[in-house]
Length: 268
Image (cartoon, rainbow, N blue to C red; front, side, top):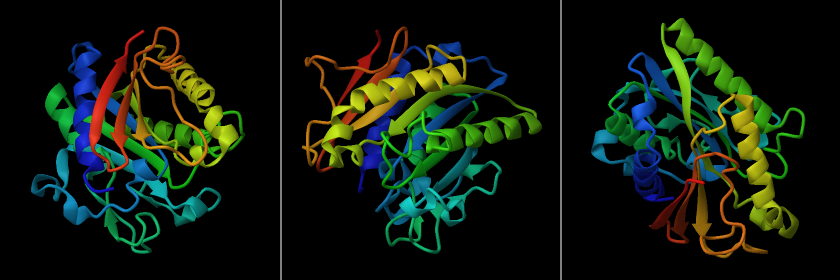
């Protein structure tokens, strides 16, 4: 986990400039960025002490709403940690049980540098909404076709966060979606083989849910061989890209040592 969040989110922030997103905001809006997925979105194995000094303290200019936890919190939300159904300043998170971050009390995910870099790049008020559960699959727990799936829970979290923005006197607009998930699907040959189809459907469902056909959607892929089959088609291979008709999307990759290797925007 070390350094993954720092390096990747530098690329994520730059991607918004590539998509030409910054110029589409109005000064009265709060740009809401969604971060969702499994352990890499949670920050499993991270240690808040590894954050750069500037991010050790709360980022008071960035709104943050979160709900996350270990795998057994899929069916027991009481095991999750959250921001108390309210926005707080962007900050590392604390789980006294140590279950969320894999034996560590204080941890963080990509939201730290993601939020900081986006806020600095856009020069406007932003909010980060994080919902992630360790060891969960797109074929199973996240599948929008499964009633009560994590997808459905995500929509409730987003609705609650948007409602809270309104109560605070803000007008929120969902401005981008960051997806960090996939390694759990790679444990099963069938799920891995279906991942591109499932992710394409997931992206289309998100965009349809919020009436945002061009919502920027960035996803992450690990550059190491999964247990069964190649999880994702890479640039230059048939089938690369899952952003869907008319959509902005992109792939951010890192190798097995978590060093960023490339960002390839898909702007079809």
